[in-house]
Length: 138
Picture 1: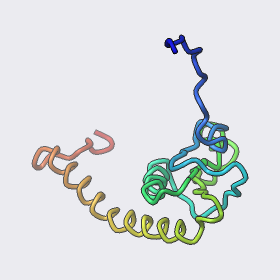
Picture 2: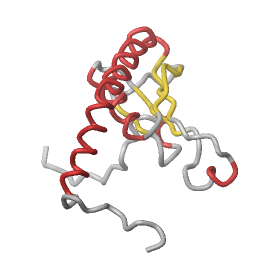
Picture 3: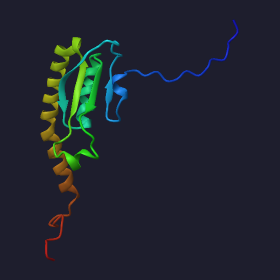
Picture 4: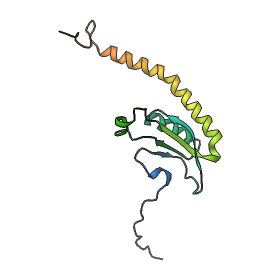
């Protein structure tokens, strides 16, 4: 048959659960339509949430990291820090919890190295004997 022009297809939604908010991080294979998602951990910020979601994606586990508060408005009315809930289908819960715990341990272990590197970088940009800020009252 001759090639017929195809009507443009609308983009397919990969994960219905991840389409509701701007703060969702969705990775991994498509979950079944009847999957029940359970929380297997949390992350303190979107960077850690993305790293944890990537680790679960590497294990071929569908994952959604969903922000639990609006970062622009909530600080005005709710002083509690935001967090991201890490959710996976219930059938992947045991292995996902292990992966999340392992990733949290890796993040905690690297936190000291990152702080030291930031301090060294800051010291290297300061002139010798110069105070980074002028003394108060001068």
